[in-house]
Amino acid sequence: MLLRLLLLICAPLCESTELFLIVSPSRPIEGNTMTLTCKTQPPPQKLDTKLQFRFYRDGRALGLDWDSLPDFQIPAVRKEDSGSYWCQAKITSIKAKLSRRVQIEVHRVPIGNVSLEIQPPGGHLMEGEKLVLVCLVTGGTGDIVFFWFRGARGVSLKTKTQHSPVATFEIAAVRESDSDRYYCAADNGYGPSLSELVSVTVKIPVSRPTLSLGAPGAAAVGHTVEFHCEARSGSPPILYQFYHEDVPLGNSSAPFGGGVSFNLSLTAEDSGNYYCEANNGQVAQRSEAVPLNITVPMEDRNEVLTSAVIELLLGILAPTTLALLFCCWLKRKIGRRTAKDAVRNVPSPVPQESTYFNSQAPEQLHPDYENVNIVSGDEVYSLVYCVQQERPSAAEPPSGTQPGDKDPSDIYSRLKKADFTDMDYDDVM
Image (cartoon, rainbow, N blue to C red):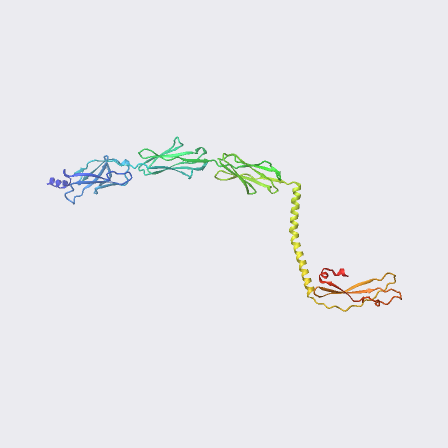
């Protein structure tokens, strides 16, 4: 009775039943998923039979324990996962069956391309900065061995193995002697692949330059002074810039290092402080200021002083002269308008008393001007009074009885208006 029961239990795994291990995909690629399936042939006679499965590689069990699922999955298979695989199925601990062994070879993808990048980009650094060499690969799988080399001869700098397509190598503080060409290589089992050569240039920052003058202290107008600027250290090329009171004068480059000179023909305005700057691509360094006093000859001083005085006088007198001319013109215009518009009446002549002298001097006439009036148009009339001195002789005829004599009390003179305008009243008197 017990024997029959055991036969019924072990019937699904009788000697005629075969176990097969199926691998998918049949040619696994490193980095991809690989699935192992344990399959019975023919299938179990009873569908309600519960089988337990387990998978092995090179004699070691995969997974933690038995499982009712006939499948086992490796998410990212590696080259190291290559080996001999089989599976086992059982119903009870009394009876179990093994599959045939299957040899599985995991294939890698060869490295397709290797490149070297430099940080900072361009490969131009100042001494003391950090240099980062980044080696990149495309298309490769599995663990990759990275190599860094310096120079065309391939001096080895660093070797690093990692399961990544990117690896870095750093030089914390570069020196000027680190200027060279660099390259890297990568290998994942199919032989190393090399990158191209990349140049790295390391410069020494310029030191503070020194400015010197060919004629220190003082120089005369018309002389030529040589300015020399030089930085003691710094990688070439170095660009020098000259300044006068923060105003650029000119620049010059030293392609192989050292200093440069700048010539200046002096004028009276060139007195002041001078300095220079040196720059080789990082931070410009400025020299100390150097004063320069320009000596002006005496004749030049007189010319400068005379010119300054003339400019001062013109600046003061020009507005004053214009103001006076304007005032005279305005006063004259107002006077003409008043004389033209005013209408005055001619007063009656005032009789003048006669004056007698007890001397034998000849007769004298004393003209007196009573009034001046503009009558019309361009004609001006003046009223003149004359006083005649009488002689004491009785034989002389009375005054005013000589034929041809004019009345001394009324004498008119006809003048043009233009003449009257230019004549002063005091001159008439």
